[in-house]
Image 1 (cartoon, rainbow, N blue to C red):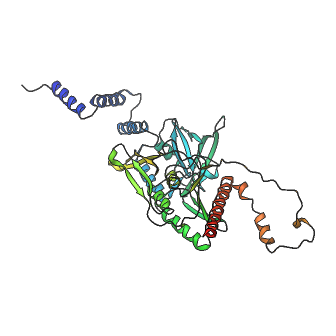
Image 2 (tube, rainbow, N blue to C red):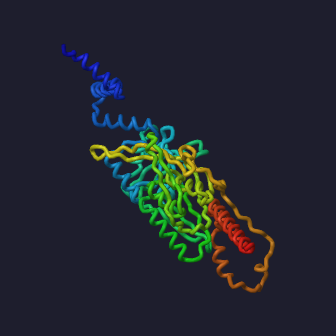
Image 3 (spheres, rainbow, N blue to C red):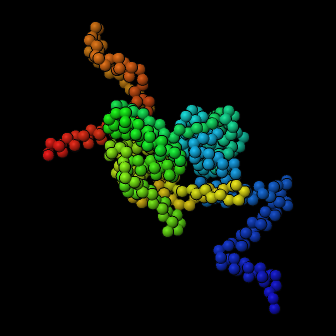
Length: 418
C-alpha cells in the first residue's frame, strides 16, 4: 500500500533532518511570512520581507557579514578602486550602533573632526540602532554636494553632538610620501586598494633616488584596511622571504599562506611602523607581519582588532553576500581578531606645548655675526615643530633616528674589531 500524504511528509522531514536541513524552522519561517503578509496592519511587499529576513540572518552572525543589494554591491566594487561618493568613513557595528573605524584622509568626515571610536547614533532622521551596516553605509553615501546630518557620540562625551557634512566625491589617494628630514623618509598609506602596492613601490623608489635614505616611517594610523592583496604587496616591499599572513577558515584544509618574495626595497634600513586604534584589518596584517619577522619596530597604540576575512559571493539578481569565511593570523600564529597588534613601543596621542628657553644666546646679541645657515633656520622656525603638530610621528622619528645611530655605531665598532 502506498504511503499517505502525511506519511510522505514525515518521511521527507526525516530525510531532510538527516541531511542537516532544519525543516521545522523553515516551515515556521514560511508560516510567519504568510501571517505577516496576511495580517499586518498595512500591505507589505513580500520580496522586501524576504530581503529583510536575509539581512537579519546575516546581522546575527557578526558585524561584518551583510546582504548587499545591487547598488551596494556596485558601491563596494567602487570603493576598492579608490573612488566613490560619500563622507569618507570606514565604519563597523557595535552593540547595534554604527561605530567609526577611521575617517579617510582629506574627506568630509576627517575635515569635520570625526575620529576612530565615535558612535553614529542617527543619520538624518534615521536612528542607526539595528538598521544594519550596509543600510547605514547606503544612507551616508549619495551625490556629491548633498548634505547629511549625523548625531555623533564621542568617547568621554555625555551627550551626542550634531554634525552636518556635505558629501563629496571621495577619490582616495592611498599613498603619500615625503622626507621629514634629510635621510628620513615618510610613507603614509591611508587605505589598501588594488593599486596600493604599486604606488607604494614607486614612492619608495623615488625617495631612495632623491638622496641617501637612512630609514623610513610607515604610517598606518587610521587606515581601516581594504584589499588583502594590497596589504600583502606592501609588506613584501620590506621583506626578502618568509610568511606575511595566513588565513584559516572552518575547514582545517582551508588554510592559505601568503609569502614574501626576494627583494627588500630598503635593503634592511631601519623601519618604524606607526599605528593606532583606527588601524584595522589589512593595516594590521602589514604591522603584524613586519613585527613578527623582526623587520620593523611598531610604535603607537593598540590597533582595532579586525582579524576576519570577508568573501563577497555574488548571488542571483545582481546582489551579493559579504560573508565572513576565515580569520587572519600573523606569521607567529597570532590571531588579530578582537585583540589587534600591540605596539613594541607604546606612544599615546598627546597635545604638546613646547616651552622656549629664556637664556640668552649669541644670536640674541646685537650686531652678532650671521651664520651661513641663518636664513634656512629662520624659514624652518616659521613652521610649527613636528612635536606640536603630530606628537606620535615626532616620537616615531626619534625612535627611527636612535635605531639608525645604534646600527651605524655598531657597524663602526665591527669595522674597528676587524
